[in-house]
Image (cartoon, rainbow over the protein chains, first blue to last red):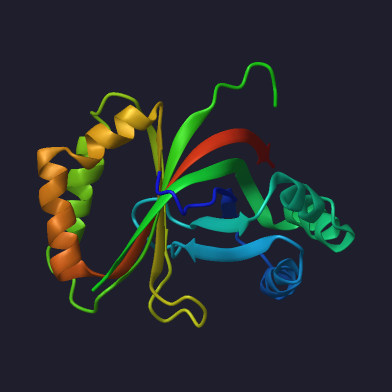
Length: 111
Length: 111
C-alpha cells in the first residue's frame, strides 16, 4: 500500500430491475442528490446494461464511496432513503445484493 | 458482521472506452473465461452504460471477486492477462480505475 493512501469504504450495489419501473428514475436522481449532501460521502459510479445485452441483460452496478462505516450506516438509515429502499423492494428490483467493502489500494490509467 | 461470514476480496474496475474498440469484445470474453479458471476466483459482475445515456455515458463497471489478495495478484500478473491489459491501455480505454477492496459484509434481497 502506498504510504499516502488513506483507506475508505465502498458499497457495491448490484441489481436487476423489473420490467415496469415507473417512478424509478426520479427517485434515483433524488437519492443521488441527497447522498451527495451526506457527511462522509466521497463519490459514486453507476452503470446498467441495456436489457437487450446478450450477457447479464439489465444488470446494474452502483458503487458509492464513503469515508467511514459510520457514514454508510447513517446513509442506510436516512429517513428518505429508507422510503426509497422500501419502494425499491416493493416495486422496482427483482433482486439486489449489497456489499460493504474497505478499499485498500487503488490505481489509475489515463490515455 | 455475521459469524458465518468469511471476508473475501473485490476488484472494482471502472472505465470508459474509446469510440473504436475493435477486438475488445473477443478479448473480454477470453479474459472472462480465463479468469474463471484461476485459483481463488469467486465470481464477476459487469455493466456498461449505453453511450447514449445522458448521465455517465459509456461508463462501465466490472467487479470481480476473489478469495485472497494473492489470487488477485496472480491474476494481475497472468501472462495472457498482461497482454490484454497492455492492449486495453493502448487501444480501448480512455481511462480506468482499479480498486482492491476487502468485502466485510453483505446482504441480499429477492422479490
